[in-house]
Every structure is written in C-alpha cells, then in structure tokens.
Length: 361
Image 1 (cartoon, rainbow, N blue to C red):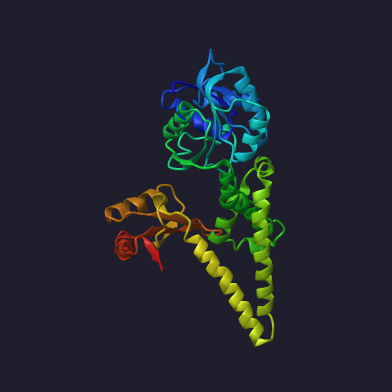
Image 2: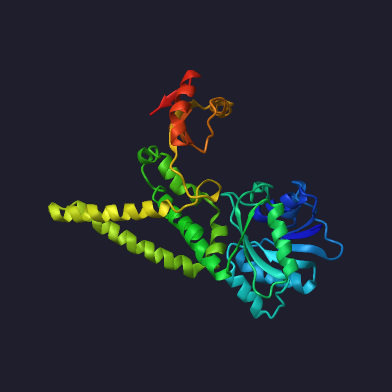
C-alpha cells in the first residue's frame, strides 16, 4: 500500500491515518468539516489536499448511519482500488450497500475494537490499535486483493485481524460493548443528584463501572441507532435479572427466616453467575485470565513516583502484570496495586519495603 484516502477525520480515522503516514503511506484526508481535516493534517496524519488519480485504499471512518452513502459516493467516483469502513456495526451498512445495487467485490466491512472516551482528531494516536482486535467481515464475493489490503492495513496499525460474519459481529459487540456502555451510563446516572457526602465516598469500584459513561452521547446515539435490536434483546435479559435480584433483596428484608434464606440464595446465584462470566474475559495477551496477587503501595502524588516504583520492582526482578491506582479523596496520595504472579508477591513486598515504600495489606 502506497496511497490511501481517509474519509472522516475523527478519532478512528485520524488514528489510522497517523499509523499509515508513520509507515510511509501517502494519506489524503477528507472530512465534511474541512477544519477537522486540516487539524488531522497538522498532527501529521497526512495531507488535506485531494489525491491525484486513484489511490490504493479508501478508508471510510464516518458514523454508521452515513457509511453506506459515503461508500456509495466514493465507489461511484472510483477514487480507490479497494474500499473498507471502520464503523462499529457491520450488517446494516452492508445491506444498505447491497440495496443500492453496487458491486461490492472491492469492499470489506471492518471494525477496529479500540477507542477512547474522547473523540475527534486531537484525541487520535498512532498506537490506538496496537495489539487490539480488528474485525474483518468479508463476503464470499470479496476480491482477494482487497482482503489483502485490509490485512495490510491491520498489520500497519499493529492490530490483530479477526474474521467474522457481519451479523455475528453485531451481536458480539452488542454484548461486549454497546450494552455495557448503556448499563454504565445507567449506574452513573444515579450519581447525578446524589448527596455530595455520598459522592465523596466513591472508590475504585464505582470508577471502574462508570468510566465509559463519560463518552460523547452523540457518538453513541449514532452507534446504538445502527444496532438497536441486539442491544435491546440483551437489556431485556438484564432487566429480567434485575427483577429477580430486587425480589431477592426484598426477601432479605423479611422477618421470615425461610424468605431470607431464599433471598440470600438468589443473590448468591447472581454473584456466582457473575463470577463465571468474569473469568471468561481474556487476560494478558488474550490468554485465559490468571489470578494475580496485589502488592498495595502507598504513593504520593508527585512527579516521578510511578517511574521510581516500577524501577524498584524491576530491580527486584519482578514483572508487573497489571497496575491499578486508587486515589485518596482529599489527599495528595493514593494506593497503587501492583498485580504480580502470586509466588512473586512476598519478594516484591519485601524488596519495596527495603527501599522505603509503605506497603499496605
């Protein structure tokens, strides 16, 4: 691939353009808002000047509702040898293109499973997709050369290709992305009018659950409008689970011992089902999740402290598998959880104590 056109210079389009430009591809940037394309160009994502002649690949990075129309316009003008989109839903746009009677042999639907809470070109990074799954949904009629172009794009962005059926993809992202986003928003909404004294008690748990609720509502309306059925089906199931959980909790309020036992059993069932689902979430490098042990360290909110603690862990010969930070409310300090193999935890704790760190149990 030597030349590409990116249509839509938001977070995903600009990030892909940055990755391609950084690897020597000449990238032309197009956006309905010329100022946004100029911003992406100023960041080093390519040029906002039009391409002279046909480019190798056109990447359509617009909201799902506009994918079919944008692709149809680009294909009719013949601006590229191959075409793909990066929208978060795949079945609907493909059916819209089919209904327009276009030759889709030069088209492949794709979806990089990566993003941020922020949107727009200023949030873009060349490494946004690194190590992340990038779904490809080719049809049997797709041209082999276009598939190769899509695979090259994924490789240049250092992502991991995953081939799926378009509708299976839409059901999958409803489960692992779209439905959780709405549930996160519903939980976060409980905080809007909560007493300040309650909000001040927020810890890492509520931060974890509500993190993705900070995303742009307009962007999510576009996404959910393109995949409403699978998301609604999942929320119906969640609603059923919530009703059962509410009944179990009400039983725990009862003076009747048998009802309280039934309530406790109902809550245990929900929690154990959650345990069973959580362990299926892939762990490090996509492997089966491992049980790590946390070495908890008090750390001050000063420049260089994280670098120092990682350096001390390295001197102890211990690999940090994951890290979590919990900030102390109203204090210039926090707790860092260094997740390590269980066998390595005692040695790491002892080594950090020797270097003056305050270890918490």
